[in-house]
Length: 249
Image (cartoon, rainbow, N blue to C red; front, side, top):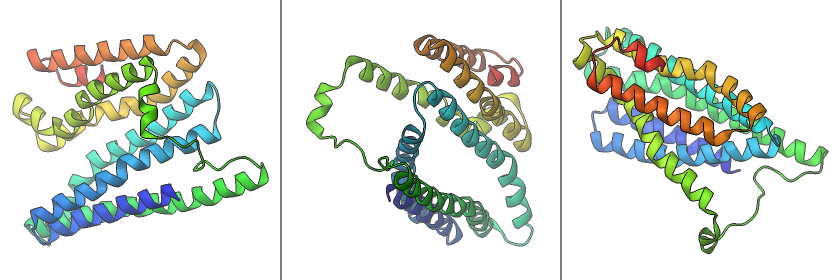
């Protein structure tokens, strides 16, 4: 049920955002993004709960790698497809109307996600009946006072995520403008460079997930990932080397 609720919130939030662009109401767009954010992050947690319920042991790293692959493929498609769609719509509609229509077209992927969530909920319920196992949505109850009992390793992982992810996703979201201004690239070329990280991750995530499953050296791989990311950002910040090189790194 949680997955369905969060998928619905994401879908509604995106179409509110698109409607705000259509009527040129910035406050409505902000509202849509807020609603989308409430559902989006919660949906990721629900998705992870399904993965943990359906898969066990060392195969989990590979599973999460495959999930990451699909996410990166979708992000790459977004980078490469949405601008041509906007340019096509802009031929018959202008300004904020073209933007609103383009966002609405992209929103149908949210509808498809909602349909997948419905199918997944049906499959999970059938699995719980046939195998007589607990549903993915049924878990141990957690209370706020339990936070104080979390081990140090949990907090270190949390700090790593909080400090690492802002160097990736916000940068990718803003990298198009960065590449246009610093390297003088066209809009389409900047989108192409921005999508490189997602393309590489789409193929590398399941492979590294498999390697981590086999080696078990999780902390070592996390450290290498952090060092590689630091090096890539340093190259882009202090040099004018071809941007494809640090984005691949």
